[in-house]
Image 1 (cartoon, rainbow, N blue to C red):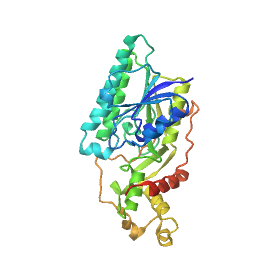
Image 2: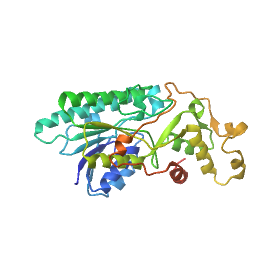
Image 3: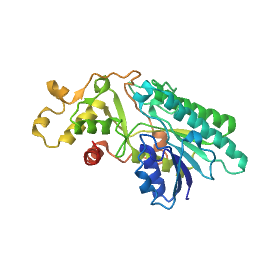
Image 4: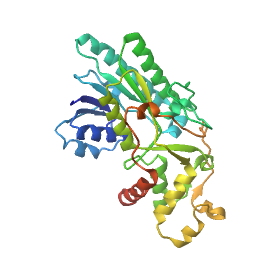
Length: 328
């Protein structure tokens, strides 16, 4: 069945993958984006080629009303942990106040005599805090470790409270680390490629030891389709890519792919030993740093979804894309 959906943050990384996937399904998409530094404005030209796409340039806090729709898919957020540690105001504004505003729009929507849309909200694996062994379940207690994850956890709690008090329908998704083409350069993978292109050392905090579970953004977008088509509501779902490794292992692979068949480099990879400082700046240490994220997503997989993208197959495509498309 054709759906009508709002997608907030439609020009952001995850939002753009969700937008494109919904448009290809033939759904009517009302994209909302305030065009921050991390928005890819060039995507507007692509999306406007679809007759089922319309765009609203707007901060979600300033969205005044909702046209009739089936879902609000909220991907709008400030997401960079390091930025939240330096200054958290924007994170509170977007990640907490913005969600509160959407909830109030939905609460008032009820009075118009229409079926109330479902809020499909993007949270994060970071709301659980880290886990040294095993995997987090959707029912685990939230223990955020930094300002970013605290604002996301607060938004989750707002949604659950508004759902109970006002009977608002919702779905909360908590994905692991997303990757793919189109990510802003503050994130690990494109940032590492950028620094290699500039001939600079890659900054890695905490010696590159944090472990991350990698999930391709297309798999994330496909999970949205699965949830909508399954007609579920009032549930929380983890989304995991099923592949984890340290940040150092990730950047080691990027260095090798970037330099291709450089025999001198290959002789030192992957350990670098005494030469590893040729590529890295390990002087950074991030406060509130989680050691490892890992999620159990059997609940989602039982609906028929599975992650299809393989990290080691996708990484060469991403490295090649950024080598050719970065404006250094």
